[in-house]
Image: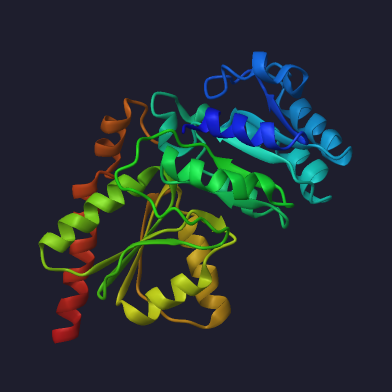
Length: 307
């Protein structure tokens, strides 16, 4: 099943669910005629849509809102924080074309700080699926959660068959390695998976963790990666500040843990618009480029051990 079919199935099971959109119907284009008055298009009014969703939630509904991630998390941020976050209402925020998925769009439409913004709201959960299959697996638990959730919408085809059991706050361990751990979420899972395979071909044992929910984070999986491997690599299509690297760093400091960490993220810049494969290559985020950066770090660490 795809996202739209899964969403319709869940709505048919629970009349509390409603679908809202700020004129972003690409993922839900067949729902209006099926949902009737449980589908609301507010037009290009992200702030009004979030405010309306909060009101519906106060009346016992569970609104599932859709808008471009850049506008949902930035233009409507105050409404998300104040109307939804402070009251901890079960509003679900589905952000379209987040990160590199906004490939052909310029900086105004690039959501590269969305995770940082949403995790700053105390009640907010964050779901970043690796692909559409992963998104469909997690959707029932996320939508039924009593807390608000931000969902990084991801329609990419899967490169693996994901483990069917999904639990909020639990990572999916794709491979079990003893030397390097790659921590990744969302769009770049396929590239991280390719990097893991390339490193394995070089004889390097790599653990690959699909974090799925970066909030709540699977601290147990991260702790095991710290204890059982020698290098943590964080991979994300997000600014280095405020994203997964920051999350891991905060965890290390707060628990007084120690680890070698290699962050692979955008550093203080937006990316050059192009088709997604060209964006990945130009910005250095293809599987081979990620593997090369990890191998360079690993070789540097090895030289230090033998000096």
